[in-house]
Amino acid sequence: MRDPEPCRMKHTEDETEFIEENEEHEEQNKEEDKNVKTGENSLSRSQTKQKDLKKRRDKKSFTCTQCGKSLRSKHGLEMHTRIHTGEKPYRCDQCGKSFTQSSYLKIHMNIHTGEKPYECDQCGKTFLRASYLKDHLKVHSKEKPHSCSLCGKSFSHLKVLKFHQKIHSDVREYMCFECEKTFITSEHLRLHQRIHTGEKPYKCSHCDKRFSQLGHLKRHERIHTGEKPYKCSHCDKRFSRLGDLKVHERIHTGEKPYKCSHCDKRFSRSGSLKIHERIHTGEKPYKCSHCDKRFSQTASLKLHERIHTGEKPYKCSHCDKRCSQLGSLKIHERIHTGEKPYKCSHCDKRFSHLGDLKTHERIHTGEKPYKCSHCDKRFSQVATLETHERIHTGEKPYHCTVCGKSFRYSSSLLKHNKEHSPSVVGDTQTYRLLDINALP
Image (cartoon, rainbow, N blue to C red; front, side, top):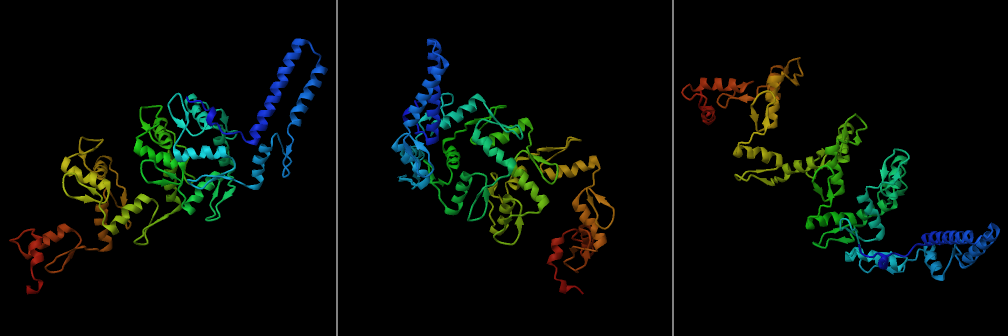
């Protein structure tokens, strides 16, 4: 691992104060050890200690007029005063962001240059800051020293624990003045505001794509590099996103942490829960740009809009047929391949369509899920139900093209057609060509 000392960021005032206090305690301890050895009495030791402390504290002769804080040097006071004045004299010439100290600007510039001087000696991953590397090393050690006092969940980083605890309190202190959306942290608000400003400071080093968040850029660049840094602890599968790894591992653990607030159904993904809950709420946030139809899922909207656009992006690899849905293409290609992936659990019969398998299995189970809305009769197929309900409604959808007579069933129409021309049995196309006006 590279020596982090040359690039280390200067300590903030609070950190400096803390270090100085530790130094004072260390000096006291050294002095006490020395006095024990020499046999010096405790009163003398105490007097010496008080004098040393006074000398150290007297060195802090620069006091802030705003808050009364004492600083050791004039430079330290100047840096501290910028907290009150808001002065940020060091400006990035790449994106315009300003900083209170030149060291902060230097670290920030690494975002644009791509330089990551701190390297993990275990996996080779590089980092922008020494503190980031320190946090990352906990991944290898599996150390999670920070526990939530409310639910017992453990975290490797203190800042993640603090963020997690706000979920319990439901505190959302930061509000966007553009859309009034609220956020748990100021950082989340700042990132959100880029939606309104259109700011995208992070540019891909492989293509011209830009991003509003550094994390989104890193995730995108893995498309170019093929990097998959996240490995499943149960199998050899690797992932480019940590979130994808967590979701995948739930296949092994069976964990479903997201519970529906309306019923007892649980989900392994938060997105799946959101979509499911729309069944209960009736929410349909996605509206068709061509008509007034609304949908609960973006995928459903995209499929629907292809009715208007005529788009059929999926082409059969065996013929020129195109389909608007990937599922429809897969089903169609089974005509060419003869594939029948769905096997009956009661007999050896196989099917190319899942729907056909379900219908077939009802022969074995006796299930009749479709009930007539006019009587108590039930059916195993929806088509059979529709045919039956014509008895109640009087609907006769099959019309003779020769004499105009209507029939309830297609079989009745075929039988009727034979009466017009016994010599052409069942050829309904012939009857359509006959001139109805030529009949007596």
